[in-house]
Length: 271
Image (cartoon, rainbow, N blue to C red; front, side, top):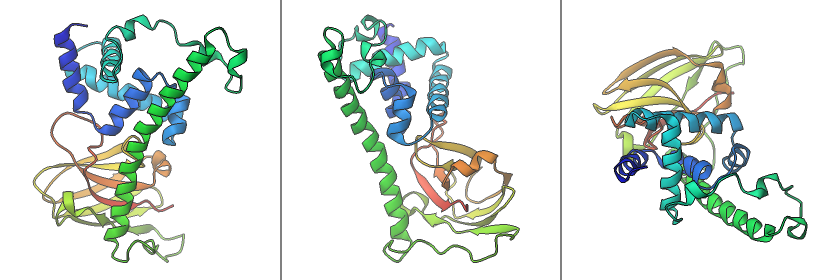
């Protein structure tokens, strides 16, 4: 790939949120498979696969380039950024032998040079854990902000509605992130069938997205909104049961379809 193309790819990758860049790095530069990544970030293999595909298609669309071309370019770019030789992506060839070696097999029974490959695998795994830990810390900070804003030090979770299970809808109570949302507020309800009705006020005159949310890596857009106030009346998909929160985030107009990490309002979805 030409230097100018790599520069354009680098600029496109820099616009992705940290969770998305970490996912691509684990998959393309560190050679972890979908199962390993899913175990590290606590989600399903299908989610990892779908998220990576969406990210590659997003970058390919921005650069008007084939997805395969973008995938190989990102692989080379991320490896270069990780400190490997520029030609590493092209010279690696087939996947390393440790992929076919049982995890409980000792280095002594591996093929010649297996000890070196095992050490390399452990090094990659250690780097992967550091990257995922960074994403986990961001999620933890968000949780701490929620409990701090609850007003009681976070020792007691918000009280759940005492309405009977047969109630037509459950009222939603939103926690605010003042640093991003200022005086934003929301009220509304979620019916048992998935019908969501919200009234949101106090927003800036900016663009927002409402998400089904577990983490920056595992989130699904529900609706795009525009301040200073908005009304939402949609039926959430059945997949909503996989998500813990409903999250409203401030989204810059940069064409990035990933969660920006700039949450404004958040509520726990009723179970």
